[in-house]
Each structure stands twice: as C-alpha cells, then as structure tokens.
Image (cartoon, helix red, strand yellow):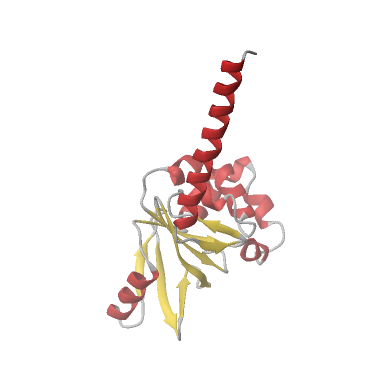
Amino acid sequence: MNTHSKITVLAMVALSFAFSGKVTAQTMKEKTVMVGGAPMYPSKNIIENAVNSKDHKTLVAAVKVAGLVETLQGAGPFTVLAPTDAAFAKLPKGTVENLVKPENKTMLTSILTYHVLPGRYSAKEIWAAVKAGNGKSMMKTVQGENLTFWTKGKDLYIKDAKGNSAKVTIADVNQSNGVIHVIDTVLMP
C-alpha cells in the first residue's frame, strides 16, 4: 500500500470515528427513560427500543412469533401497554408456552393487539380522559375491544375485559412511532 492509500484509509477511519462520536453525542442529548436497564430513545421505534429492555424479553419474543414486528416498526402512532416478564410470569404455568405455538397464533395476536391503542396517548392525556369520565375512561384497542382506565392516588390502572387490573409502572416512554407505558399485568380480551 502506497503512502497516499494509507493516508486515505486513515482519513476514512478518522471520519468514521468522528461521525460515530457525533451520533453518540446526538443520541445522548435525547431525553431517555430507562426501561429494563436500557435507555429508550425517542428517536427509535417501538421495536428498536423494546429489544433492549431486559424486562421485556417475553413480550418481544411473542411479538416476533405473532408476526407483529413490522407493524410495530411502522409509522403508527401506537400506544403500547407493555407487560414485563414478571407480568407474564404471573399467568398460569404453561400459558406463554401454549400461546407461542403456531396453532395459537390467532389467539396470541389477539392478546398482543389488545395491548395496543391506535394513536399516541400520554399518561397526562389518559388522566384527563379519566377525570372527564368521572373516574374512568374506556379506550378501544387495535384488537377491537375496550380497556377501562382508572386512577387511584397517583397511579394509573387499566382493567381488561376479564376484570383483571394492571398498574402502569413506567409511563410516557416516548418512541418515534408512539409511546410505551410499562404495565405489571398481562391484559386479556
């Protein structure tokens, strides 16, 4: 390799480091929320962030099995009520293993889309809807059925069609294509 080629290669390497440093600095300026030990970047989509949360491995795996990755990487906007791995662990033994079987894809998709609202709803907007509804607000999911939102003290809760309640444990995790609210219970249509 001649001297000119070496200089060109070194310049390209230096530029790539400078560019990656600039991207890192830009990303560092974003207001992130920590979920599952990982920062969630508002400039990334729901899937790009969720795969980094150590608390959402079951949810991410289920989304992949259901074939919803492409949808949740789309423009949206979506409001995702994201159950943690601990929430999935509260289901009866064998439930998750049964749901991810190919023959149960329709049921799994129904459950997952029951955790998604079309549109972007911040916790503040949901609280306002609950207040306007005299203590509760019903919102239609992508799956087609309603969820009921209510509050207790400073906490926001969601009731599913079966009467189970989930608490929002981390609200307003902004994404490029929506918002995630982490919940402590899997909701069932």
